[in-house]
Every structure is written in structure tokens, then in C-alpha cells.
Length: 187
Image (cartoon, rainbow, N blue to C red; front, top):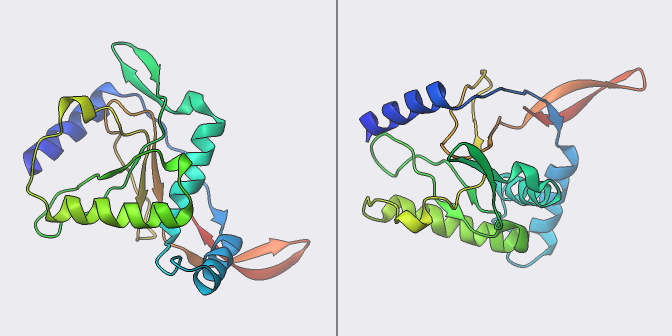
């Protein structure tokens, strides 16, 4: 698996043009909304910030379909479905698994939460197997949750058009209207 990961990273870096944009965003409202959901909606107690990020990404891909593409045979191919892969470590050993949640834009947060936990569990527990050829093109976006505060360089999974790395939520000092205050943010 390690050799395959190394080969794909080298192939990706040498054949896929890329650029990195780093933005720090305030997430106070998202944290507050998640807590409200957990406190008041049955079944929402396991909704994570990653689930909320997946929903936001799906809605953004629906609004901007030109981003929901793959590079195939020298041209962009627009996708009809909005499928999001989650990069997760395997239950044992080294490597990276990318289970996919399909049609994320048509699901609510609770459905996304349930399905993401299910596909992660199946990926971690199931026997290693090759992707079926007809399923290799289903991944549209890979959000990766980066737990460290350090700068993170990621690689593009061919032939996908976007990858999103998200840092941990942290307390930060912000200045609004000339006054400093504490806020929750993530990069």
C-alpha cells in the first residue's frame, strides 16, 4: 500500500497542475448551530463538524457546477452527482482510505452523519479490494480534516478537480469594529 501511495503522490504532483489557497474562517456560528442541533434534534447528537463541512461543500458544488469536474482525456468532464470522499486512516497499519458518500447534496445533516460513519466503518473493517472500474469516477471532492496547526501540503487525487484540507478549530483573537475579541476559527 505504501508503494502505491508514493507512486500516486509522485504521479499526481508531476501530472496535475495545482495551486493552494489558504483561508482562515470564523466558525463560531457553525459550532453554535452544531450544539443547537445536538441539543434539540433527535438523531443529531452524532453530527460532526466534518458532516457540516460536507453539506456546505455539496451545496457549494451544486451552486458552482464547474468545480464539480474531473480531468479526463485532456478535458474537463462535468459530473452529475455530488459525491464526497473522506480521507481517513485505516483501523490498523499505515495508509489512507477514502470512503465515498454519494449524492451528498440531496441529504440532510443527519443522513450525512449516519452514512459517513457507515462508509468509514465499512472501509476500515472490510477486506482490501480494488475499486470496481465503474465506481472509480465517483469521487468529486475530498475534504481532509487536518488536526495539526502546521501548514499542510496535500496531493490531488487524479482525476479529481478539487481537494479541501481543513485545520482544527481553535480560539483566535479577532478585531471587529476596532475592538478585539475571542472567536473560534479554522484554516
